Length: 331
Image 1 (cartoon, rainbow, N blue to C red):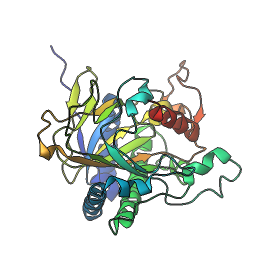
Image 2: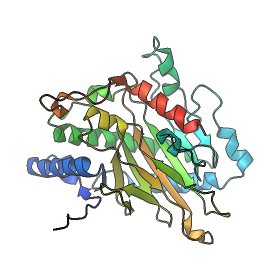
Image 3: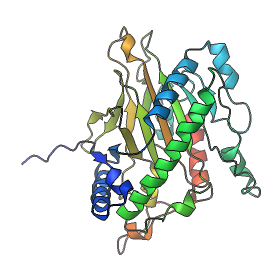
Image 4: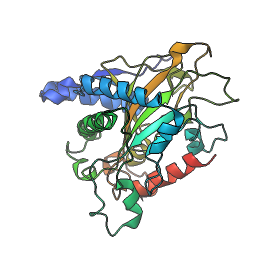
């Protein structure tokens, strides 16, 4: 008998957030299965403001429509070079997987932590850039406030999701609380314009990669040429969240924490099949949850079977992210 085909599951997490014990258990069980089997899920009932999200999409789209020389004013030049505006075809995420492919067909505004933790990490010089003040566009008017508002919304939601994850891993619900109180998470506002000329061989909107951090929360507009997930059978499956839904996927840190019990899954953003398709313009806003810079990423005891050894050496979150970012800039 053929095995049933796995699909990215859709889970309403509102029963967990409401605090109902039976509802919490059902959500935890569903999330545990999704993280174990695929590493991707689509969530509803998350409580993120749809108004804040719509405003962020509108104003960042208006920013991307500005002349190139105007946008370039917000390209970072200081210590925090992974933030601010990064132009079309300047980064390649597939390089983090050591793939020799052309750069990604997208442009991005990156936003880092809103809370300045540099004083706390005064003795750890390498942590300073992770908490450096942001380079946030101020044109059009209000785009900076919109980006900060949606960052705060994702920040709250990620803490809620980590409470679910902790219970799903047989740990106390607050297990992650002291590991994220000085997080250095990144918000990315990606723009994939309609293509005007054929891509290079093996060039995608975003090359195949796994995410760096603990998890990613993603909102997206609907357009041709979108997110695809590498399923356990090796096939690629498209994922499109409805306007009231968000996509959640695990990153490499969670795989290390769980000794690969949970999956950090390969994914990509493919090109539209028709270059003449003006409706293929696409946006996404993602939140990449990075815990505290000095948080230890090592196997959780609940994920280590008797007689087994950790598959990965212990590393700090800051060391892990720095290694991945360096690769993404190397063409």
